Image: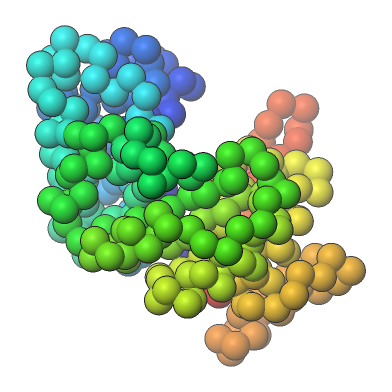
Length: 272
């Protein structure tokens, strides 16, 4: 399993003792704050240790909207702030014997016409730091067809771009089922690192079952068949790893919700 933590943004539900370490909007960490940097490294160390010191750690760093809104951060060019933050977290992960993984979107200039119709949320200054970032970072390129989940495309130039820059690249779909097998084929053809299915907040009802089955078939290069039960597919996990008990090959974490319901952890990873 690979632990992940949003270490730049997505902080709306974190108000409380940590609020003074956030940007005014409450969505991003104040990455120029030394105390925030200390807390983030403490979180990495604790999670990495609790997950059994795995070889990878995902630092998040996507959708950093409003990341330069406080007076301290506003005095520094955003590209400089981002470089110091991303590279610093990667260095800390490396010091623990692991490789950092991060989302791609802040590393693409949203005004660059090359990335029209692809996910990109950076600007010219953040895109410029790509050549300066440590090349051992695994870039996780998430492409969800901009809400058109029925879209079928066969080429993702952003993934090739990061690979040409010297990075290890993983492609990451969501519920864009028609594109999953095509994306997996694209990744294989371009010698990329792997295929990561994102599930996010759609883990109730049948969505999670469809996501897991579709992405697993795509990753294995086989046609998607929803006529096979999920339980049967789950029992095949790990067969090529000589795992006798399929529960050893997948970890499912549950946490209580209101009304006694449970939810599946966003961190779960099938070790295929």
